[in-house]
Image (cartoon, rainbow, N blue to C red; front, side, top):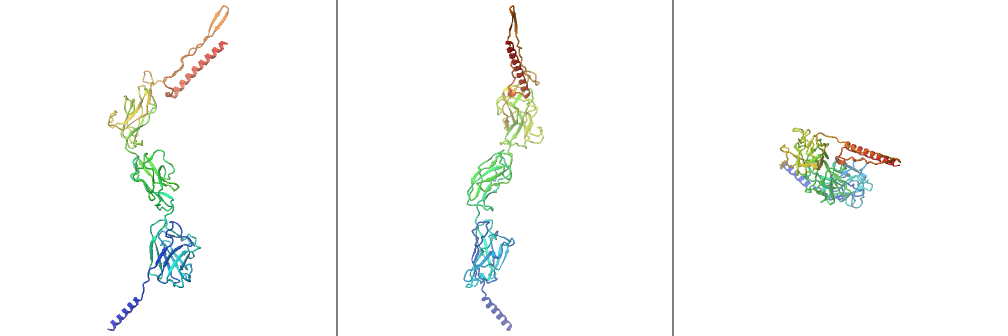
Length: 502
């Protein structure tokens, strides 16, 4: 019985003791002073770092722990952040802004731990009241840097060593800095076919120096194409088309559905620019060739002579609609002569192998190049009105243009001149002038001798068998020499006539 009574007595004592223990209340009035500051800036000297109101008495030697918002930076360089950079004051009689007796900080945990000095405490509130922690007037203004990332809310917590845990507020905000640069926050799809709109269009964002979106900015963003990753050399071989500029909405220019595309095969980079902001250069955009659409006669004679191989032999390229060579195409290509383009008018055959493949050797089975290079082609009919060298993808290989063979192309017009009056062998013509010698006729009379000079003009001025513009270099040289000889003979005759007349 005595044992039971003893146990009950102990339990009653513990209950009575626990009833007299008052759990410390939470801190109130917690404020983070830098809230509302611009991202990336430092907390200035003499500014408020934090405020709070205690419910449990803080004494000299007590500690106050600040958990400053994540991404804030405490300068841990030796000698930069020290206790004298801060002051603590309990508002009331007998207190003054006094530096903490010690300071500890954690760069990784974003914490500052102050040890309260006696001068910080008020005599009338005895540690239970409102406290203000400030940067001192001697602080360098480089001790604490605000976050560089703008968030709508942040977190700041205060704990005292005599309290019952941290009190946290979450309404800390930071203001985006001034517009500084552009960034591609959405890249166009790659690879993409020439003249086909990017499946994914670019997205360009107006940002501050730290990469935060300037949501209030509506500046016009312009897109252009460049050849290099630094966007320093503008493209010249092709054209970027579609809607190339638009105004940002809430700081973002989204080119979705605006049809940006490029028409030449290769690698390009897109540049986004507006005003004086730093421009942005996209990742590499690979443009690939489209489907075979047409033929381009990229090499052709400007003049031809019967029974002689063309001086410039035909070369035909298989290209897409934008004239990009389809290098993977090894189709069979045929060529013929027409008196009008588009395979209209009179058709005549070329002499030589006029059907070959678009391969490295022109033969079936060769490596595809998309280019048919002909050799030994000539035309044996004079046509000074002009002919067109026309080509088509000969799908059935019969050498005849059929209605269903639609991938075609023709050269500009050129003329065919005679190279021989009859023989099918090339003949070199030399223009030689024919002249009649000039001289004098002498008549003798009985009264004496009378000399009569009769001037006989040179005849047969040298003529050409073809226009000078169509002559070869050798033919031009021969013709000029003939003219020179004609003029020399003419001048000689004139000189002799003048001499005889004296």
